Length: 483
Image (cartoon, rainbow, N blue to C red; front, side):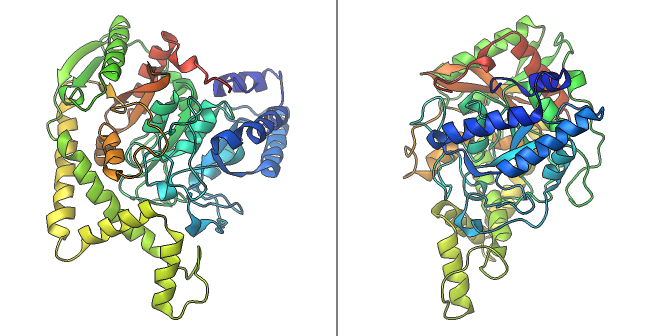
């Protein structure tokens, strides 16, 4: 049962081959047995899961149907879930039980999805390795000595290890696509505004976007269908009709124009990954796609711009965690200033503190124009590069990451080295574009991903290209040894 995809589960439930309750119990037992090796979950919600599974079975017995009705999933632990701990991987929120459901949680629950638990993540989504969590690092099921990517590493590791078929995740600078690449999954960051951010605890508000992590493009289409849509509670949500993503998965790639930026194949890219990307390009050419070299000239400025904008927004968003209303509070504060200082000093980990300090500096009176304003101008240049490119091509293809997953602890003493691993992913967040990573092969037994980018609201195009690719390759079917 644990090897089934979301699509296969939907068919099995519809054909009454098993019940949602039976499937849920199998997966909960599997999580209990195997997750101690991975540390991919922060909270298990067994009682809620069984209750939701029984309700889904009753709805099916009454004639209801739906791809997500009775399907087991998990939520990254920054989506608020009513009455359940929502920690953001931080000591600061270890005691926080959300008083309401995030829109994504509510929409998926209404569709009949079964919540198995909340997955581990980098603290407040800040990291590329899932090592900054207060609950400990997550391990990569392909090699337990390596990172699974971040910040959605818990969701990625759990799905890759077949503990569940799919999970929600978020992407601020690559935090869906990079873990997908490191764990042999398909991960989609939708267009900014396509998925509601209401109830999704913020890291950087103009960059964060929720999306699906699953083994196949077909499964991502199913999960995104349940997540996407306009939300009046979210001022950044865009009132744009949501197409039937699954219905567009059968379209031919004949004549599809794929742009390959020359900047992607620089000295920083592992040559073995470059070879796998070329193999993917050849496969798509066989399916009828036309390849064209393009240029994204301002890509080189994306990382410095991102690491000004994201920390600046983080320093503002995280100012609310002060030990007063909710979250960690220090013992016996001497006065209000002591309460603030010690609560935040004890509640936040090193990476979060680092980014808050960088952001506060960039926003300070003497440096706002020199740093934050200039970074926003670079952001516009990056977006303009993409708009020019999409006048010539339909999608853009390249590597998801410059290297495969590194060993746990390998980059802890050099945060900048970890930041550079986001070089191919952060541009989509700066521009607000949809991006997808899909499995493309292995280097030294570790998975490698290929990234696809599309114009605004063309998630269906990305999912179709990935689906056609997966119909003709088997990388996505590989399972890590022992799982």
